Length: 334
Image (tube, rainbow, N blue to C red; front, side):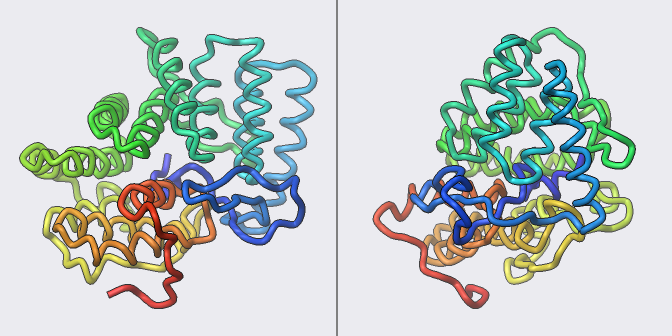
């Protein structure tokens, strides 16, 4: 799994925002009332896009022949990768009619609702998924075809992680912290260092935003892994970078980046949203709301509207500046 990719870690899909080609492309609205449209594919190089289209056609045929939990999940994932969130939900709805107690199908529909900013629906599916997985061993996603296999993600880890995101979007920091901590615990035995950095990042923000500074500091102090443990090749990790900012190991002036990670969902948009959001959180925790404001705006104005950082920036903006719309930011905020 790659939370730097999913983040967008950081992982809800790289969805494009722009002028609609048709009304049928409308997927929903942002928390600030902006329409969210399908306009183009983002993040996959041409060769991978060809394989994605091929895999989708095969998955559709398999799904229409006979609905199973695994082929519904896989087909829904492929539709999400191509920005068809509503179609993905429809596939999962059909699967859940046949398998109403499937925690895996509920985990995926919870993520789609999160992407559409429908936090209450996401939480309801997430909690139901947690219930149905209670007492069961860890399950991983089934791989797709060899030419486009997908990641063998831990289902229960993402179930709790997305539940944490939905709670955080509602500013329910206590429940968000519990969910992120559970996601961290689920992934601990596999020594998944990327999950360690992403969950610690959000756990810290949960405690800090709730005003529990001592608890937040303990969470940070417990994070001792290096960048090369997180990414053995030394690749960038925006969650790791954010943790170092909050620890005081790097200046805030070094945080913002526009670099392209070169992988799906880790495009420059995702990096811009994530580093802008971390910078905004730093200033909010320092009590400098005026300095946080343009950084939240910067995170919100990226084209990709499925990144967690953009979703949470919208939620913060609505909380802090309810009667304003973000002003366009053309330069790096100071």
